[in-house]
Image 1 (cartoon, rainbow, N blue to C red):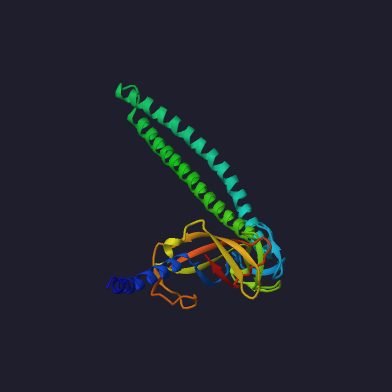
Image 2: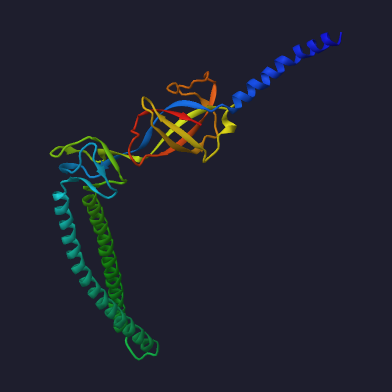
Length: 297
């Protein structure tokens, strides 16, 4: 009787023990997924359009930040800038003349005002004629008008000077932008134009990818997400070789999303997953943009 009871209890507990063992194995197993390596790709544009004088790089060439990649012909812009500078020089002369005229107008106004006020006091005391005061009033009003006109002329010249200076700065910026420089250090992956071609403004001339620091994304189900932490080390295996690199989890999405169609995992696809970004140092340039790899966490 006791033997039969033990057998019955064992039969009841066996499925539970097998389930616990299965969960423990699953929790201890590592996460593995296929991914595509990506780099920071920048299309470097020529903000100034025109005739392309030089393209100083070729595809596959390494460049440093600040290197001159291409040069657009800016000769016409230089002529326009010289014309603006000549206009500014002329305005400078006019500004000095207007300043002199304003000073004279101010002196004439002060003299006319003083004389008018003096004769006005004399007329009140019956020591001067009203006709003389009326004549001085006319002179005073004319001096006032001339002073206001001199002030407005000087102000107008100042506004023109500011406008021309702004045009000059814009032209100088366009001339500077004719020198297409590398915004980052990296590798030239694509060259869109060659020397001798005419390019429109803001057209990309080359594409640069920083191969020294690569990254990829894997998509993790909510059941495995608690096992992944920021700063966690990831193994990066290059498909078709025995090489393995080390990566670091640098970002975990806080929002669930549907699994992208181009993402394949050994596990069964789940409805919702979380994106995990893994950054990989690539000093020897082993990894390439678009290279398939296997990620193990």
